Image (tube, rainbow, N blue to C red; front, side, top):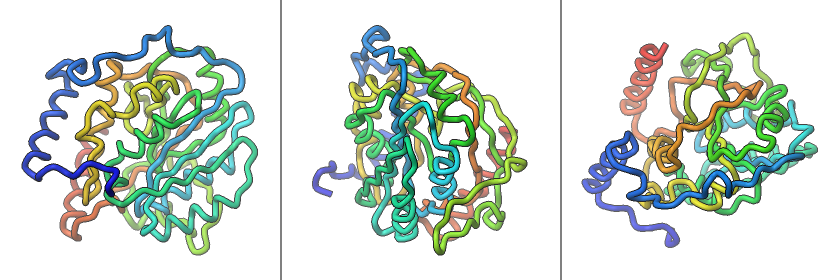
Length: 302
């Protein structure tokens, strides 16, 4: 862990974290932290066969990650090249077993890229996203979550939509989602021992429109990613943590880029929504309370 800053004291961490959430809501100018951005004209208008890097995180989520990786095997691109990057922890043995299985799947147009991180670095999602952003060689980078699926026509449709674009940030204008599934839902118990390529029942999903580039739907121009990283200008979001951090940096990333993103038509984007979060590291009471809060929030949104 020596390559990462020492975590701040708990009181400072909480206070400064709240300040950044208020700042990202518009309380202060992002120029306090990110003075310069590449202009639109400096972002290359790439055409032809594009290279997309998909960046995902997995901690105790192998049962979700298997659907995401399976979607790439079942519906591989024909008009673009894809690097599938997964940040994971070596202590998460089920995810390690899953990634080893998919490493053996040789799919034209897909390159698997498994990147282990120390657990404390994995728990702050912006750390991995920033590493990927600064090091990518792709034309575009899709920052996502491991419960998002790229189904029929998704990647080729995305390639078509991205031709010649110079936007800093775009997002699918719609996605198909399940209801908020309870832990005992059959969809949340795919075959895992041994792992295998799995599919879904599309009848379980409904279409929803989106109005901004939320955490799983942030597709960033590669030139912008290399120039500014992912919340690299906010050292707070590059601090490791002993517990999984709620991803407030998603909003901060849009704030730093001065955009909510530009909607584009992308078919075949599916997401599995679920009450219980395997990444939660507290006790049963803490996990139960957080799951109940997710249920209540979902009801309010619907």
